[in-house]
Length: 335
Image (cartoon, rainbow, N blue to C red; front, side):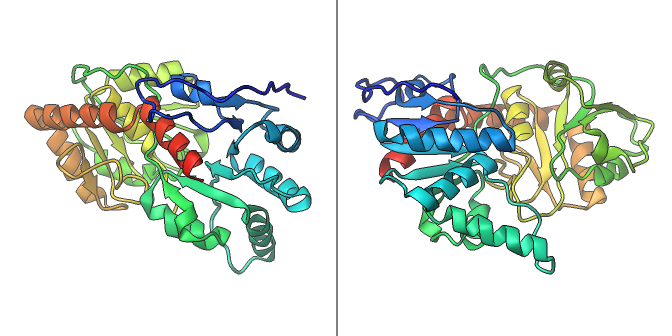
């Protein structure tokens, strides 16, 4: 089992500190990029498997007496810890949970109904549920049977440590796997006199016919993905219309490299892109609208530079690790 050492309450402030001591937190989340997070949080880990989630939950229960709060990242981790809390109690330590991804609603399937009942039972003691889109708050409140005020929207962070306004490249770029609508993208770019590079997982594109102007990469290393992203002129994030939130990671990484973004107007993008301000939003599942937006970015250098500049400014202001960690710690303190 992982070892945890109790530590005293932080007594700084740093540049992103509220000027008061932060709560002491035990968590499986690592945010080494934030000084404030590292000072306040003790990280434990036990692997991502089901057995690892059980070991982690037991460790959190054993060690939480030394801390003010418990913060979990991941659905298995939150559920296993919630199950132990239902059995042995919370120890008067608030549980803050993040990155609990809900699966597709299947109300006519008995297995799904049983799963939802279990999920609600082990989530009842969650003091705060952090989501990455404001549009998800009501969904999580309803599905987990949590009061709406316990479900809090925190804008996600970019994974790029040093944002930089790079030059406009020579191709369009798209990437990602969760709820990606590559069928609509391929229909939109077919026969355009412009090259595109797509980085996807094999399952997302297995049944699709790739246009001749699309260079496809599947399941490649992150370093290669970042190199391709940096060389793009603009980035397309085609998403299926769904109640779940996704796509923010690629949007924020694209903006961190100073790339203009066109994305489907869905729950996962509306809190991150303002149309014709720091990106372009188009109706999901509409290849004609997506094609028109792509053609604008293909030909209008001034638009590309304007959107790119606004995007990188927004990332630096609202989506750094420092900002994200500070907001999470403030929510934990309030809980």
